[in-house]
Length: 524
Ligand SMILES: *Cc1c(COP(=O)(O)O)cnc(C)c1O
Image (cartoon, rainbow, N blue to C red; front, side):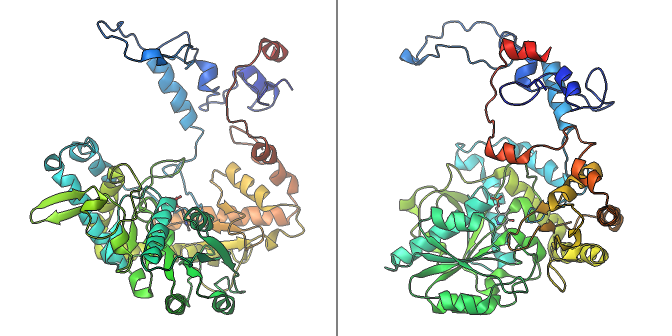
């Protein structure tokens, strides 16, 4: 099979030869257009723009002017449009179908949010504008901060973190600053349950702590005896998710909070799963000291594919004085921005971002809250939990729930139902692609063998859930009926078929290089 140095066919003819597409001359299949990389499509010699040579602009680059061509592919506007539209049609999207990725909360993004975020007064503001010209934007930040504190029952919030993991970093830096301010610099051990999201231990290490893992008990929750045994005067705190990543409520959370406080540590709660409890439980009442909120999950701002996130972090009375700059404050009728540590009322641990955060996400999240109201937000949590339990209840006769009893907003299955079928969790997920569904989160959390974590979210209708459940049920029965080959070949209906995932992980090719003449000839 002729391939270039990157191990991939670079031209349509190659795609046909490799079976990458159905047997058509063009490589396209009906509405699905074959499309090469943009570097293969355009060339550096072409350009889609026609700008006059700049006049009278002296070169002020000194000796730093680029010596060689940049080598960017040039395409005309219509060619560029087609390229990206063709690629977009190969993508799965929340606006296309149910997106059951556990721990990600891929729910519908209301269009009202988009409309508000695009108002020129929000969309076109510049962070360097004088404060007097962006009072409305500051007010949005201030009001959103107010509602985040109200919903969580916490007295402080840092708005600038730009993702969940960034918010974790903020909370753990605040804990570290508080410990240091109190002369507790020997407290550097952070307890993290083994089911935790990978960002938790990574954050702790990044903030200069060591990680000590707490095992789960056989109900999938923190093993309390193991937890108590790990408490000591070098403990800085615990990082815990509730509901946890097994989709279960940590029932002992109050006792965990009390014990960590008695031991002189702080309670960091990973709030990524807040949509399961929003409007029903205030984490502040549970004894939480710091918690990030993923606006892009709980409050429905679009995410995925590296898109923008926003991770405001609520803080307890002990930690709030260490919140990072900048932040907005209301002064009479005016909104002001506290930019510098020297002007802050407390002792900020520093700064996390150049400016004050993700304005577009703030506007969307506030719109979401306002349009739901307090009754609507409560219903978000109720429906999220109901939908996950509906899936679990309707599938437990063919798939194997990892734990007994009701779940929160995610249904977790393990691979016991596939035992002896020759079908793996990965094969099962690939078969879902052929059925038109994005697979659930697979092999996470790590504490469950062959895990399949399904988060339907509250925005799916019953008929949408039924359709999805029917597909999973049929696939489970097909696996048990011995249709192993179908699973191992899947996906056969996707633009790209089964990939060598091990090779992709072990030998990633992250840089495009032009094919050599030899390779092109070999491909002819
Ligand atoms: C998504 C998630 C995170 C990280 O959030 P990002 O915005 O992706 O950085 C952390 N913890 C849990 C439990 C999550 O689901």
